[in-house]
Length: 210
Image (cartoon, rainbow, N blue to C red; front, side):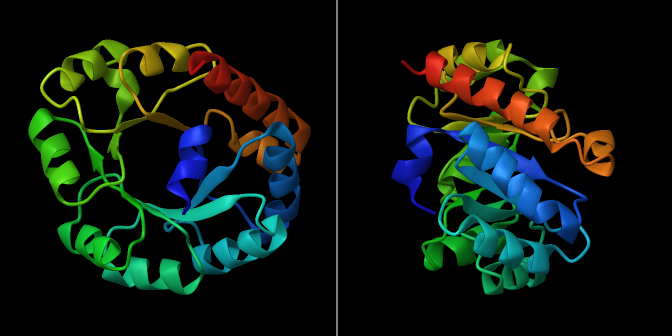
């Protein structure tokens, strides 16, 4: 993952439970909306194959990574598929260590100050604060007090209406998932609705960081 590229538009889409038929239309939808980074979770059926297919379909237009990586077996499968970054809902030390050694950006999940600090010390590119919406933007402001140098990624309940508040409170990036990649829209192949929602988030992200 080109972290400089991600920092220019620090917005991450999370795909879970998609099928091979979704790959091409989803790539066109999110690229058309301006998104540049997306993950496929490893608890999605055939995730490595989907990651490989999305990388090929995107042809450099998207940074594609793996999410919900909970062990080295998942990590090996993700990296073999070409994943450019790794995301976890928690800190799995051996995964973080392997990523750091291989210079693969890793985004471990954390919530409490102790967990956030541990994830950062383990070599996180950014620490994914999850679930962010349970505590809100004010929590980020409090965390940034003692941990001014720790980069935080807000994940869980972030929307185009709330993203600016997270950035104002100190978040370095934000992620979104099922609220945009809705199961019913995927089932009905209503990819234009997904594109519209991603566009709103992209515009809100850019406006918040001016």
